[in-house]
Image (tube, rainbow, N blue to C red):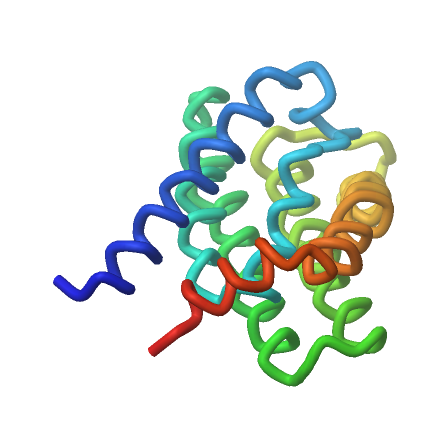
Amino acid sequence: MKKNTLLRLATSAIIAAAYAVLTIVLAPISYGAVQFRVSEALTVLPFLMPSTAWGVFIGCVLANLYTGSVLDIVFGSLATLLAGLCTARFGKKGNSVKNRLLGCLMPVLFNAVIVGAVLTWGYRIQEFPSPLLSYGFNALTVGLGEAGVLYLIGYTLLCQLPKLKSIREFTDRVNQK
């Protein structure tokens, strides 16, 4: 196995562990219809290191095992994987303000749409007489919590991490072919 492949795997494993631990330790605000999952800030890391999308995904799977819900485990984790892969694509286009903003938007959109559906139809969280209105409300609340995390914490990480020489050197090593 190549040295760089091992570095990518180890980095993804550390990110997976960090995501799972942050989510579970902060469980009261990490789960439910209104959530502020601080660990979702890690979904910006694929912007800097595309291979970490899989680490964030595995961390989300582990965190969602805590709920015991197959819907959370499958669909919530899938939302995080899709968001991570899309965020990585924006990172490959360059570290501009526009790409950082769009990279942060991916987890917001995927989680609002997918987790909003899981809450509405999987958990039957229906605040309104119409399932579509309930879905809109659930998608909105998930999206707002996600936007708070991504634009307060995630965007700050995307702006500040590349300024640190040690982080730049590390991401260069991880991204090396």
